[in-house]
Image 1 (spheres, rainbow, N blue to C red):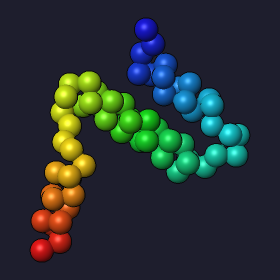
Image 2 (image 1 turned 30 degrees about the horizontal axis):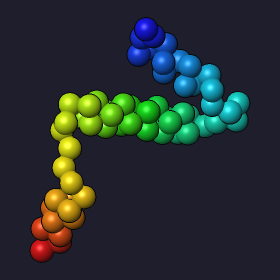
Image 3 (image 1 turned 90 degrees about the horizontal axis):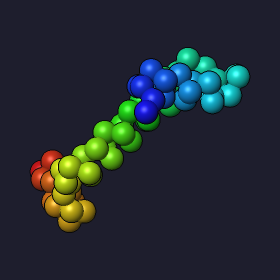
Length: 61
């Protein structure tokens, strides 16, 4: 099993040579958000699309 450092190092190495610092940080942040989302899904910490729609509509009032 790879460590977080290994995973992120590999992600950085896979970026194009002309990537900016911002591009790399964005890729790292996206990776972390996806991992969190997958962990939430695995732990059944999810809501339906309908519920999310209701929540968003409540923010608009």
